[in-house]
Image (cartoon, rainbow, N blue to C red; front, side, top):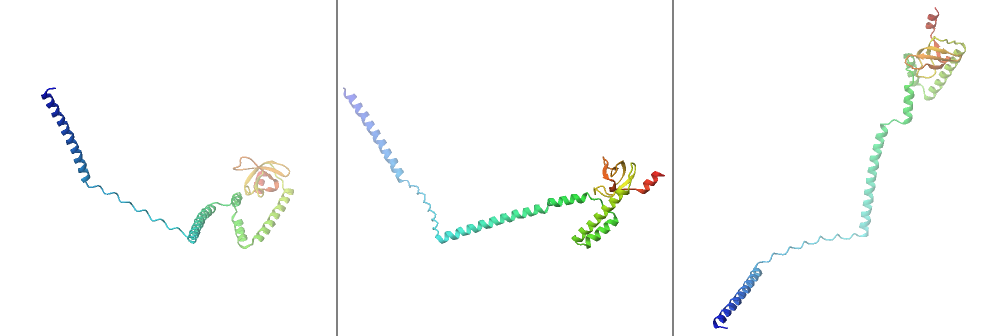
Length: 215
């Protein structure tokens, strides 16, 4: 090997060593700079909430009693609300038996002036027992008169009659006899599709109309 080549190799080795030294120095300087930087403060720990003190037996009993009392109060309040709603609903709803009474009243024939005066007088001044007794006497009187009419009254086809007993819906209605039997008759009343099937004692022959028909 020549002297020139040996010198060139040595120079290259020195350059590489110098470069390695420089890199090492640079790394140490970088570490030194990092260590010199102030460290970020650690986050302070949040102190734990203080634990609730344990209740004594007496305190537990008192708390349980308070809860039970609150449940009773809430239950009573709910029951009161339900009762109030039920009462309001019942107030707006008529009992079933009163509906039947109202329907029965609707089927009654209207009272004339004289009848209305007597009815008001009786219902205003008589007791329930007296009214029942009076009603029984009136019913018996009507039955006697109906029996008398059945024995003496003759109803013929074409007679104009007034319904005086039987179904209260037709009392006071005037119609014409379309068929007559011994104790029964058919009466065609205006507004009724079919003739009424009545006892002859349930009608009263209109005398004026009968006399006019016989003239």
